[in-house]
Length: 305
Image (cartoon, rainbow, N blue to C red; front, side, top):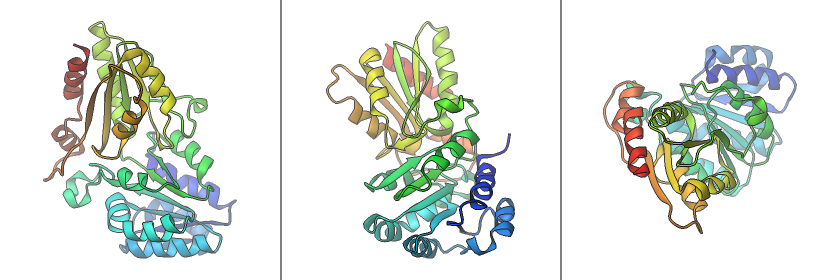
């Protein structure tokens, strides 16, 4: 199965040959896979280099002129380094942009903490005029990008290096709507991104122990599907949130908003609570953050007691 980054490149070619307003700007990455687009649409493909603030400024000018910019580079550099430009050029000006990042969380783990990024979703959530999507498969990215890329707001797509490989029917993938992966009555697991794979494995372990687990998967964090989680928690009264994001301003924060007015809720959060230093594999750093099957199972059992 091709990586989601390749799906992004293929989709730019598919859309770009038809939509003459689509312009792609990159920060010195993905040249190889974007060459078909660059050759087909040479006047609408720009490599700005490792100058993220300049990429944002150029994208703002293109947007102001009526074009539809797609900005693609590494997550910590486009979201954290260039946040002031995004705030001024798109937040205040209420302009249109599609930001497609790679390297979120620990996807670039071997390059060290300068390439880790778990605050990106929190930062983009501050914009009232923004949409936030974390696609976990090729179909999710293709369907959701096509649905909203023309909307006149800030769209942030966080492409993971590793797909969760849980296949949904295309009819299940709806912008702004969570997917109920499994139904249950004892515990609600709410998850986003690659961690869905771990959530399903934990559910299988707990099922063997006699527990009934409901999994809600969120590919769209903004707008957030409050109704599904509220409905689930009225039944289970127990929430376990799992995310490869900062503990502040991500999935769990949205979940907490959902439980207002529901009495007797027990909740646990698994996320990134502090900077993680050092090098290692993606799995190594997830382990340091407690984002593994063993720890998730332990935290779930704590809630179920």
